Amino acid sequence: MAGVIRLLLLPLVLALMPLSLYAEERRIVLIANHQVANTSLTQDTTRAIFAMRQRNWPDGQAVRVFVLPNRHPVHARFAKELLAVYPHQLQLAWDRMVFSGTGQAPSQVNSQSEMLERVATTPGALGYLEREYLDDRVQVIYMD
Image 1 (tube, rainbow, N blue to C red):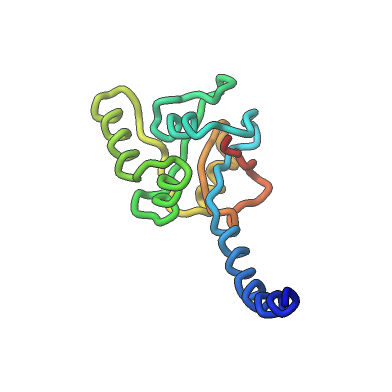
Image 2: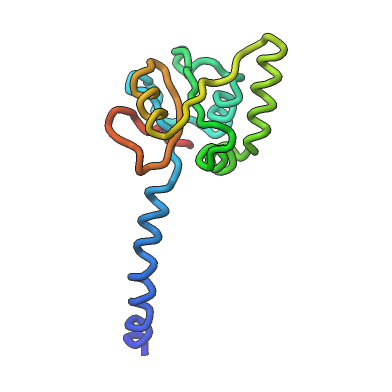
């Protein structure tokens, strides 16, 4: 009986495998310039950096934050999935800092390929993109 069930489930498993591989490529990862010493951040630290409340890496190096436009679907997924906030909440935090003169908004890029290029060439840079855009010019930052 178990052999029959395995034979019936095999086509389903094989059919779903490409979806899981696709989902892995579409997963959003934090990326940093190779000169950044940290290889992991907590969600709270990541949220503070992207809200522009924390301006330095834990080792003291200045952080340069790059983001995609608010309407970009990857930005929305990044905010919700990795930071557990809505994109408009980030925008409100940035607007408050800019209008009060206490800080500035992150640097905006237009595409994931531009994100990769800017993070790769900017010391202290932090950004995000889908795993499929990742290459060895940047390092992945893991969230604890």
